[in-house]
Amino acid sequence: MLGQMMSMPLLTSSLLLHAESQHGDREIVTRRVEGDIHRMTYRDLGRRARQLASALVGRGVQPGRRVATLAWNTHRHMELYYAVSGMGSVLHTINPRLHADQVVYIADHAEDQVLFFDLTFLPLVEAIAGRVGTIRTFVAMTDRAHMPASKIDGLLCYEDLLAAEDDRFEWPEFSEEEAATLCYTSGTTGNPKGVLYSHRSTLLHTYAAALPDSLNCSARDTILPVVPMFHVNAWGLPYVACMVGAKLVFPGAGLDGKSLYELFEAEGVTLSAGVPTVWQGLLSHVAANDLRFSTMRRTVIGGSACPPAMIRSFQDEHGVQVIHAWGMTEMSPLGTVCALKARHDALTPDQRLAVQSTQGRAVFGVSMKIVDPDGRALPHDGAASGDLLVRGPWVVSRYFREEGPGPLVDGWFPTGDVARIDADGFMQITDRSKDVIKSGGEWIGSIDLENIAMAHPAVAMAACIAARHPKWDERPLLIVVRRPGMALSREELLAFYDGKIAKWWTPDDVVFVDSIPLGATGKMLKHKLREQYKDHELPAA
Ligand code: ADP
Image (cartoon, rainbow, N blue to C red; front, side):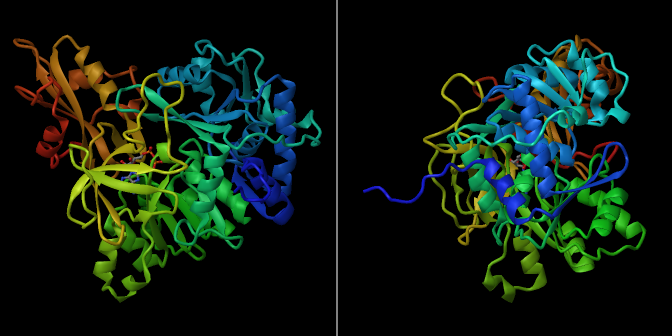
């Protein structure tokens, strides 16, 4: 027997309509790329998103087609989030820190039609404009007064586009299974892979993310997402903010400790979110200048493991509660949040810190299991460690336009993380089985770096692994076997990377060895190398 309740699709436009009607005068503040502070309300957001949708429909952007951005966290990016998905098209947020070749690959793979970009990224856009296959329209996210001189043919101005439209656009109703946004992540095979979020997955994720034992957001909060909007939808905060009616503060390009601290204080920020590297910059600034947070109450830390010393510094010195969270692009991204249970109140501060250093427990909607190399489930006893698999309504089922069987194993998504889970459900990542390197919260593809090294005439074999780094968490380390009789120095090999990748992808160090351990099928045994070089000291660290 079917239930008899209204069947209403879960669409992102409903979040915007709710924010407009229930929290219309709540503020959205942006430190603009142009340099000043911009203020508007959710009511303005609704109006401007409708104008933008009108402009895009008027330019022939059809439902399901991809609209790309290369942009910071700003109110205009927020308008694009709601306008593009709301009209039934797909917002594709591209990571501007990637090398131009990768941006071209991703934009072509996604078949993007329009590209919106912040002025900061004009040089990148000029480098790719003549090379991308499907983008016909380029829009600079600025006003007429700040339009740059550019070689890009027919470059459009964002504010002009909006000004030409009225705000009578009506958000269409369609299936909640339709795609809303697209985000590429570095796969283990070198080429980035697209994760295509649906309206339904996004809305369910939003409910889960807002809960008290998740990111704990309410109408009384002022949220400043430091995590970029090109990085898994800023961990869902642009949606959560509309759902709960929080004031939003966007930092634009100012992500250094000083800029962030000033914005936190000026706007009364209560909740923020970002990777450990960002918080390290902020904490150093605060310590060096003997400053205090007067309004900050909580901060979400994820993307890489949060060091216990950072938790202690935030909580004990500043009274800012750390919410340690784990997730991934393939999971929208929220998987676990480290929210303590009532019985943890009885723990000593050190015991509590140990619990808080784990990645936390699954939010409702995400199921987790750990398995041994034969795929057999391991106990959740806090001791057994195995490959971590997940499932849930906001977990990827297949990558965008990927042929073949897809990533799932018996309906579960293998995360590439190795973890243990205790009897309380708290998960702790112990290692990574995937080969990608995570530096300051951003991926570096180890296979790309190996391929470049292997292209050098003096290199016989090269493996790239992550080495620990105090600031960036992980940095690439190259293990290289030279060709017999050939000379090659560390500096010569590193110089070989110039221009072939984004500069920050360049390995930090090279170790020359006689051989690299291989498995039965001839594959390099990188876990052996990781074990062997786990204490390798990088020269710059
Ligand atoms: P995001 O960085 O936005 O969470 P990515 O897809 O770029 O998403 O990275 C996901 C991977 O980052 C995870 O599979 C895991 O290896 C690592 N990661 C994310 N959060 C944590 C965390 N809290 N502790 C340890 N590793 C983490």
